[in-house]
Image 1: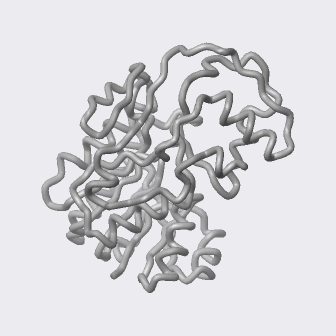
Image 2: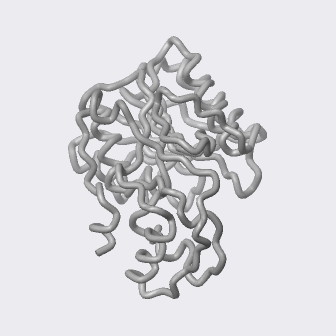
Length: 268
């Protein structure tokens, strides 16, 4: 099986390594010419791809694959909005040209607004932030397609190599909403869930991807800071807007068991 991974960043490259180890042929994309050698060294077939409106340029051979995985999150910090949706439209145009039949779109639980309740894939996300609205519009772009099947995976907050949660709030004071539950996922489970979709041929689904343990922010981040040997943060003991993201499909469709299912065990 040939898998093309559009966006070989923190998650995409780690996933690519897993797939290569398991005998998959992997095409990997980057926007940096300097990174092509890095991808090749990991056993990938590297491609330089630019999907920006002004400079859209790509080799159609990248899209000749059994499954396309799209792992290019919007650059929220730089205010990327409409441009992100346009990028994904370029991707859809390329998919149609080479007739890709199976797609995995990496999204985020940021599509869900904080409605003070537990929510799953059957809940109305009702996004109310700019980033949430952009993500939801991107998802809708793929849900409307009929020429190929898309599984959308919504990752929670990402932790793992290079993303130590102990650093997120270390030393900060009076952090609001300290009693709000966290919705996090480890890189190992990001990869495990994606691998399960491929192995189960589970296309045409929406999947929420969060560890089933949702401790309050103050407990999770203070323990994470302590483990990292950093100054502990101080949270306000309050519960404002919150959400718990769960899934009705990761077990039912994938039969997946989380590798990191209890954050306190992982932090111990």
